[in-house]
Amino acid sequence: MIAFWRTTNGRTRAAMLTLLALALGALLVPALARTNPLAIGDALALRLLPPLAIDPYGHFHLLGTDAFGRDLFVRAMLAGRLSLAVGVAGSVLAGGAGIAVGALAGWHGGVLDRLAMAAGDVLLAIPRLIILLVCAALWPPGATMVITILVLTGWMGVARLVRGEVRGVRARPFVESAHAMGATPARMLWRHVLPNSLAPAIVAIALGVGSAVLLESGLSFLGLGIQPPQPSWGNMIADGRELIVLAPWIALAPGVALVMTVLSCTLLGDALRDRLAGDEMETMRARS
Image 1: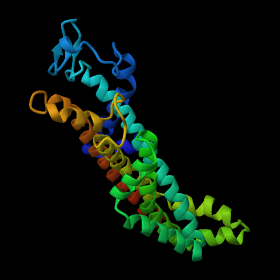
Image 2: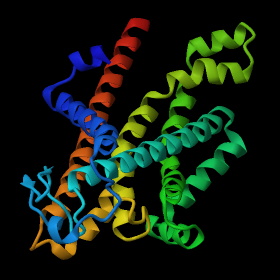
Image 3: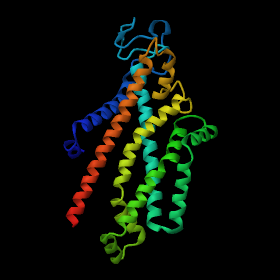
Image 4: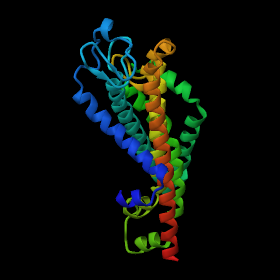
């Protein structure tokens, strides 16, 4: 991590610091809050306070309060905890499924390869909106449903990347050497081929975190994801759209947090891709 930090540019470092700050805020701010961010406060005295306001009880509100007198900063950080957890879990699980399918398909080939890629093509051909509506009809809205959707719609791209890498790596001389030394096919795949095929998948998973957070927020905005009173950046934006003229900070606070998260994940994924590509080029030059 320290070596990666030293070799990155200013934009990537800013993205890493932003994600670190959001993660720490999501963990610490709700735990240290004076009041329950899910409970409705004194609506008459606390509702729609602007950012940097001090309420009649002497409490400071960094981002103001919403229509129910709840502190927006605390709720935004609590929403960030859930959005980041769902995004990371969904991207990692989808990536894990894609790695497993792509590795098996690329290694064994034949009927298994054709079936796996055909299943991926079918799912890619179905609009994501249709899958969202089907899942919303089958399961009650919530974090479990969102993660399920992320896995169902996110494994295909990773599987194709890993499949292509496995088919290329298995033809390299060190795999033939392992086979000549008596290594079993399973050992050659999981010990020699797959570790050398994961670079594109790691980049895809890192980039997928931002997309997963954005999808979760979109579902919550439409009422198909996280349900109130549990805050999510998406349903917080939905709550603030009716007051966008009177109290724009209600929608702007979670919206800015969402944009910063997605942008930071994208920048970090791009930097990771460049770093892994550079390492691979150095490895190839060393072997040649």
